[in-house]
Amino acid sequence: MESALVVLSGGQDSTTCLYWALKRFGAGRVEAVTFDYGQRHRIELDCAARVAARADVLHTVLPINTFAALGGNALTDTNIVVQDSVDAQTGLPNTFVPGRNLIFLTFAAALAYSRDIHHIVTGVAQTDYSGYPDCRQATLQALEQTLRLGMEYALTLHTPLMFQSKADTVRLARDLGALPALADTHTCYNGIQPPCGECPACMLRAKGFAEASIPDPLVERFHNP
Image 1 (cartoon, one colour):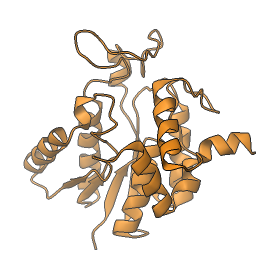
Image 2 (cartoon, helix red, strand yellow):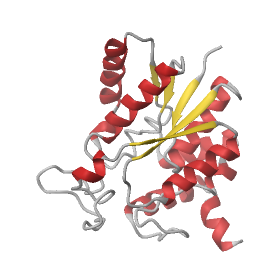
Image 3 (cartoon, helix red, strand yellow):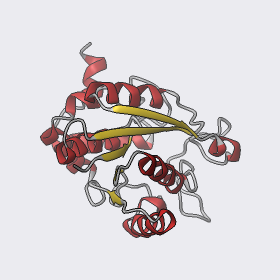
Image 4 (cartoon, rainbow, N blue to C red):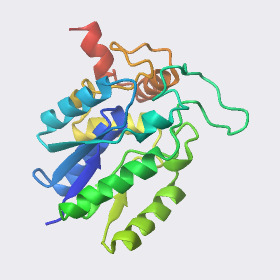
């Protein structure tokens, strides 16, 4: 039987993908991997651990500290404030971590190889991706081919949210029975819980739940403890 490895950040999208993988591959056939890449908000790691425990899947945390050493973005550099704007030269927000998904998926592929797993699931989305070029379908297709050639290994990258809006992903989470798990997730760029509700990530998440007409379990958790 085939099995899958899910890249689990502790956020809304990757949690939805975890439950998608459980439905697709079955209980006992899914693992999760989380990357400690020096992110400012360590709460992501705690959330990923809680989500994995709730779903009863094997959870591996791999350390990658190079991104923190590189700096230059608001997710790893404490001297940079998250801004709801884009750089005039690159056209990208300052939350873009160059190469992050490429590196994550390469390490995930190496882990999958070592465990004889042939399917990797990631929550990247071209629809609601803040302009990040490493979330586009063309990027993932090219990377999949590179990984197959570079390791001589039959590997498939699954991107179930690629063309879904945030409202679509909320509905998918509902249909997969993942809504309770979303109460344990983290999205806020300011790294706080309850979420600030004002940063770009919080606003995008709130918009998705509002358009889907479904209450956000994370917000409900703090408003109705």
